[in-house]
Amino acid sequence: MFFSNLLVPILKNNPSEAKIKSHKLMLRTGMIKQSSAGIYSWLPLGFKIMKKIENIVREEQNRINAQEILMPTIQSSDIWKESGRYEDYGEEMLRITDRQKREMLYGPTNEELVTDIFRNSIKSYKSLPQLLYHIQWKFRDELRPRFGIMRCREFYMKDAYSFDLNDDEGEYSYNKFFLSYLKLFKRLDLKAIPMAADTGPIGGNLSHEFIILAETGESKIYTDKNIFEVNHQNCEINKISLENLRKNFDKYYAVTDEKYNKIEFDKLVKKEDQLETKGIEVGHIFYFGDKYSKPMNASVDYDGKKVFVKMGSYGVGVSRLVGAIIEAKFDEKNENMIWPINVAPYECVIIPLISKSDKTNLEKSMKVFNKLKENKIDTIIDNTEENFSSKMKKFNLIGVPYQILLGKKTDDDMLEFKKVGEESVKLKIDEIIKIINSKKN
RNA sequence: CGGGGCGUAGCGCAGCCUGGUAGCGCAUCUGGUUUGGGACCAGAGGGUCGUAGGUUCAAAUCCUACCGCCCCGACCA
Image 1: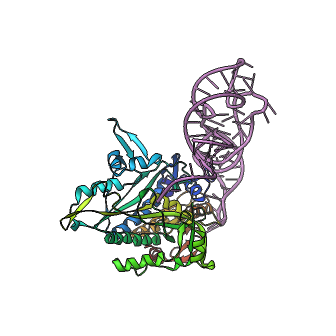
Image 2: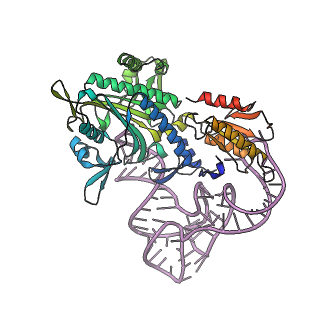
Image 3: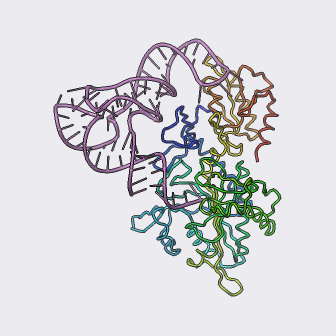
C-alpha cells in the first residue's frame, strides 16, 4: 500500500550496460536485476507486471478450453533421444549430469515431455482433441544474450500443445490458438501481425509468427499495410469461422526476412501499401503433424487401427512481452514507460503532499485508497516526503496510468485526478472509480 | 566462436599514460528550510580499486594469467 515499503530501487542514471530503452528502463525502475549474462531476477515491480501478463495469457488459453498443467524445468535426456532431438538441438541446450551420472537437461521446450505424458494417458480417439499448456521457465543457452530480457537465456514462456486425430482437426486446433493469440495481444493493447514463418528446429509445415511493430525489433518485416484492417471481432470458435479468419490474414503478404523475396513482394503488394519495418516476435505457433508422435509412438485407437496423433505447439514469450510492451508503447518525448491498464504495475497512484509537520494529506490518501481497494482498483500511495513534483515524475516514469493528487489544490469532495500525459481534472471519487474500471478488460 | 571494449561506493564516472595507499555527481543517513513537474543548506556513513600471481622500498596505476560483463557478427521464443 505504501511506496516506502516496496523494494523498488529506482536510479536516476541509466546503467551503462543497457542499450535499448526497455532494458534501460527496466533496470532504472528496479523491475529486474541481472544475475549473470542473460539471467535475471525479477523484483516486485517487474514481477507484478509479468504476473498480470501471465494471467491474461492464462485466461485466453482457458477460453479455448486448453488445460493448464505444469511440467518440470529439468528433463531426462531419454525422451529427447527418442525424438532424435538430443543430438540436433546442439549447444543451445543446457545439459546437466546428476549424481547418478544421468544425462539431464534444462528444458528449452517441451514437445517430448508433453508427448510422453500424452502417450501414457490417452488411448482413445474419443478423448481428442487435447489442448495442454503450461507457463514455465525455459533455458536456451544463446550464443549472445542481449537487450535485457528481450533475448535472454532463461525466460518465462507459455507453451501449449495440441493433439488431434487427423490434419483437419489438427488445423482446427491450430486456428483456435491463432484466434486466442489475436485476442491476447489485443488485451495487451498491442498490434500483432501473424506472419507466415519458417518452422526451425521445431519442424513441421504450418507456422505463424506473431510480430509486434517496434523500431528496436530484431526481425525485419515486410508487409502489406492492409493487414492491419483485418479484425477478429466477430470470429467464433467453429471451423468455418476460424478458417475464414486465417484466410483473411493469410491473403496479405506479411513475412520476416527469412522468407522475404523482393520480386514477390513487389508483385503481390502495391507500392503504396508496402511496409518495411522492424518487429518483435512475441508468439510463434507451429503445426507439425506426427513429427514427434511417430518416433515417440504417441497414438490412439481409431476404427480398429492405431493412429499417430497430429500435434501442434504454441508459444508466447511471457517475460519477453514485458520488454516488448515497453518498446511498443514507450513515450519518446518524456522517456516514460506507458503500461496498458490491464498490466500496469499499479492502476492508480495516490500522491499526497506531506511534510514533517502536516500529515493530513496522508490520512486523506488512506481513505481514498480504501475506497479504491473496495472497488478492485490496484493502488499505491506514495507516502514519501520527497518533493511533490519529484513524486509525480517518478510515477510518470514507472508508467502508472492514473494519479490522484492530494496537494494544495485539493478540497474534500472533489479530487484532483490525472491521466498520465494529460491535464488533471476535479472529480468525485465515484466518478474516478467508474473511469478506471471502465478501461479494464 | 571471431573482432572490439570495459571491470574503482547502490548507479554514473574521474584517477592509470608519468607508481607514493582513492575522488566527484546522483542515491543513502542526520538536522533544518522547502514542496504543482526529478529542491536547497549543513553534516555523516559507505570502496580488500574483478581475482590470483609477479616486478618494486611502495601497485587502482606496470607485467602475466584467469574470471566476469558489454558491444559488433554468424544462430534464435
